[in-house]
Amino acid sequence: MDKVQFHLDRLLFEREWKIPDLMKRSGVNKNTLYAIKKNEISRVDLKVLQNICDALSCTLAELMSYEPKGEGEQKGLLFILSGPSGAGKNTLINSLRDNYDLGLTFIPSFATRPMRPGESNGNPYYFVTRDEFHAMAERGEFLEYETIHGNYYGTHLMTYERALDEGNIIIKDIDVNGALNMKREFGDRVVLIYVRPTSLDELEGRLHGRGDADDDIRIRLDRLKYEESLSEHFDFLIFNDDVPTATAELAQIIRTCTRRRA
Image (cartoon, rainbow, N blue to C red; front, side, top):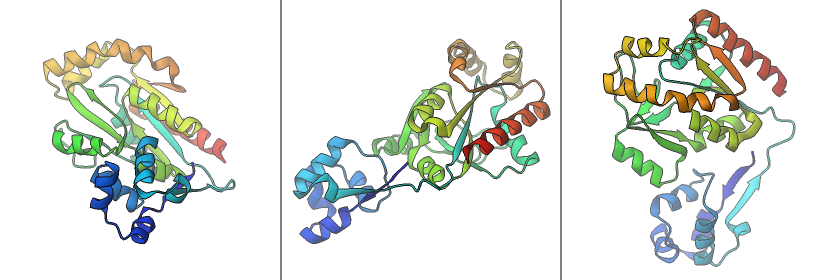
């Protein structure tokens, strides 16, 4: 994926403007303008860019340019684990990281749900308040975000773009909708893996076993049919009845796909 390079800082300097001046003339919010000025954003709505260009009396080519990714560079891969709650996606990822040296990168999503025992900020999520989450969404920082079981979860777009462009091998668990959105965004750089036990009846016991509330368990089980209906769009299916066996299968998938990327 090409890297976007913005030249807003130079254009403002040439006109002796500051960000508040451009805010008034373009109607674009402050956070977006500062992110563009610092080259800390890689995806902006075309209408927003056009409003900036109209205010600055410049062309899109003057505002931004692309640095092509070299053809000989090794592309990164993103392995996404999805499936119903209680399927053991995080357990598999932790087992993989503990038992296999595959050079994997883990990028946590942002979530508003409470931490569970044994979790910490950044493992397995960056935990934020709803107000903090909504502010990030308004700044356009998420590739996608949605409400799952009453909590917000978001995928931070620029972090993934940068990591893939740098050739990293990333592993991530994400909801089925988010997984399919990532596939649409990054194409063959994404490998989708659906995880569940052979017997779906086991899921309720697993959810009770990890201490989820009864109402939360009911919501998660109600969603199960929807998640299963999307499993046919995934590249691989892993039955997680035995963690060491499922981990070995996951490691083999990663090795095989990684060898093919070169």
